[in-house]
Image 1: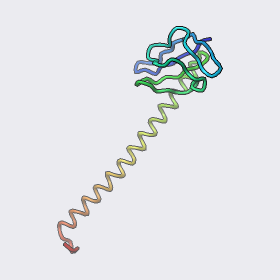
Image 2: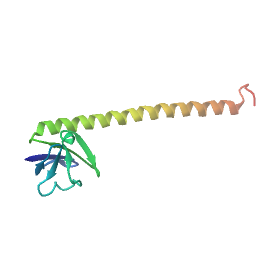
Image 3: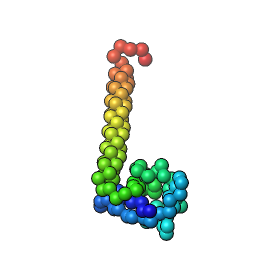
Length: 116
């Protein structure tokens, strides 16, 4: 049996085929997994899921399917964009609160009638 490893890289998407030995719950390489894969086996439930390991993002499929790999990588990237945009929004709210605090401190320092 063959598994297809799709790697998301800076320069594009790389696909590598790998002969595997199928067990009831796992896949073992017949020889070795593609470069960048540092494990002895994969569980069957790990197939068709985005994985990140040692700075590599990849997906394993049981058939060559460029469209499925592209969909998975796009969904993963969109999720990461959303997370980062949310972090920026929260950071901007915290910055605004800090600016308001600085303004309140300056008003207090100027002694606009409040207690000292």
